[in-house]
Structure formats: C-alpha cells, structure tokens
Length: 377
Image (tube, rainbow, N blue to C red; front, side, top):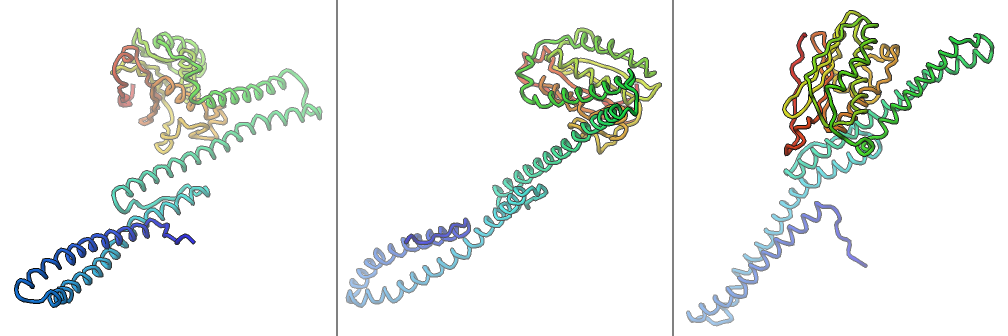
C-alpha cells in the first residue's frame, strides 16, 4: 500500500519545514560528532587521557547537546511552519468557498484580501472577477426581462387586433390595418436592433473602416432630422468645423448620428433647443448632441449605454423607445476605435463620441480626450 501523504498546502508546508530543519541539524550534528569528536579525542589523548575515556566524555557532553538541539529545532520548525501554513491556507480556503458560491450562482461572494502580498493580489483579482460576473448577470437578467417586455407589447396589441377582427368587433378598414402595420414595424425594428447588437466583434470585419467626411455626414444627418425638429417645435442649432475627417464606417456613422438626434427629438420638450457640434481635439474628432429638458439622474448616467436600459421606463415606452439605440451607438463607435460618454446637469444633457482623426492614424498611439465642461449655450 502507498503511504497516505497530506494533500493540503498547509500540511505540506509544515512537513517541508520540518524536513529542512531536521536535515540542517543532522548535517551540523554529523559534522560535530564525527569531525569534532576526532579532534576532541586527539586533544585529550595528547593531554594524557585514554582514547576511550575521551570518547565517553565527548559523547556524554556534546552528544546530549546535539540531541537537545535537534528536538528544539523540530519543535520550533513545526510551530513556525504551522503558523505560516495557516496564513497561506486560510485565504485559499476562503477563496475556494467563494468560488463554490459563484459556481452556484451567488455572485455577491467576496473574499477578504489578507495574508502575503501575492495572496492579497489574488484575492483582489478574485473580487474584481466576481464583481464583473455579478454585473454581467445583472445585465443578462435585465436583457431577458426587457426583451420579453418589448416583444410582449406589440405582440399583445397584434393579438388583440386580430381577435377583434376575427370576432368582427372592429371593422377591417384602412386605420385598423395601419395600426397592425405599425406594430409589425415595431417588431421588425426591434429584431434589426438585436441583430446589430448580436454582431458584436464581427462589426469590424463586416464594416471595413475608411476615411470619412465627418462634416459632410453631420450636414446630411442635420438635413434629415430638421423636419422632425421643426414639427416638434425645437430650435435646432449646428456648430460644425469644416473639413473634419476621421476613421469610421459611413453607414455606421450615419446610424450613430441618427440615433443620437432622434433621441434628442424624442426627449426635448417643445420650445427647447438641440445643438449638434463637432470639433477637432488632440488627434480626435469630438461630436456632441446637446439638448435642453429634464436631466438624467446621476445614478442612471453610468447605465444609459446598456442594452434595453431606460431612465424612465413608462415615458420611454410611450414614446416608442426600446432602450437599444444607445447600446448600438456605443458598440459602433467603439468598433471605430472611439469612445462615447454622456453628462447631464444644469438643465442640459449632452451625448458625445470621439473618432480617430485621419491625422492621428499616422501617430504612434491613440490619445485620450476629455469632453469640454457642459455649460449653457
């Protein structure tokens, strides 16, 4: 039968420490008893003592000291190694328990960063991983719940209309078919938006980047949205530097601009102001859409670019928002190598995004930008 060896790291550290201590004391003992014994016997013989009496004298004095030293070394090594092993094993056992909790879906499990520097770093990395998993689980739950809600509303409306038509409760006239068409279009738009989100990293391969005339794209988007701005009674202003070019994908950039401008039309009250701006900054092109009206609460700002996230669920649903447009904006802009952001205070809300300017492509690295402070215009 094979001997049973301890498998825990603490026990192994303790055994290793005891083994090293015994080996070290053994080496010293051998050197002392063999070499020192011969020297002692030679000296005592030269002084007139017999070899036997000298050897007995040496064994009775030095041998006992060596034996006691060996026993003390073993005890000290056992105690010290047990303390060290406990310091190492306790955080690892705690991480094992937390990992089991996470495996069961309890993503709020955390560990205390205690012990040596390496174990503290491991604990902090574990907590960061757990926090990321918890956030992903929250996003997954929200995605499923909100997607079900967005699908349920038009499907319920369609079912109601179709049942009413089947039972001849309402006439099959043009207005009824237009209502059915609107609900079907809503489902189509939702499915297309989900397709864009599902593309993920494949956006880069499907949409090759190129040099884009940002100033021209902004002008085209402004012309397309101007009638809707006028119909909603909004003051639409543009402040775009000429000859701005950046690295992007034309259709994707048009979709980003369309989503941001439509968002501004949807949430700016009648008589309010929407401003479209673009300028060159430190190797990037900064584009922003600012509108007056209700501010976005500070607690919601970090989440507005998440899929299906809506600040005011009831208001967004009433106005037709599905909470997907801004998620698409972030995904597209990041696929261009840019960044997105939002800030809201003092009665103004500004969504901004940056794109790598063509002049920045030849530079050695991408430079970060910060948006200018949000002030009243």
